[in-house]
Image (cartoon, rainbow, N blue to C red; front, side, top):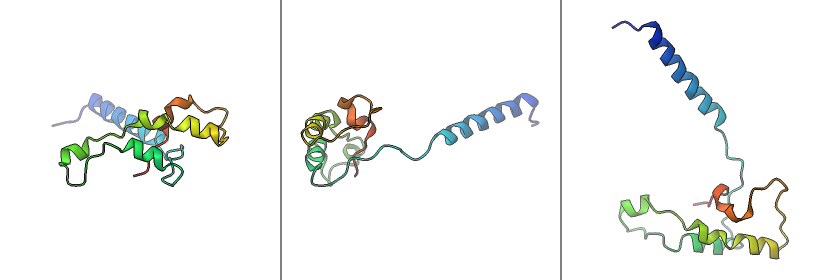
Length: 103
């Protein structure tokens, strides 16, 4: 089977697209939510319905933390402790959209 000119074009296009995706991906730039005593309540709320260690692999694989419930704790605490957000910070009510919870 001979590879024709249009096949090489398609292969080159796929390679360029893959290179583009690899090139724009990189290290995460947002800070994770620290897993410390200050943020303990956020983790407790987010993982309150987490499956037990002996739960089925299906339940554990598809579990998602309750981020929207945990995000309600961010703004009041940051305001109370006078922790300023950077001026170009996106809307405050979606903290866990960018900031990841550490496992």
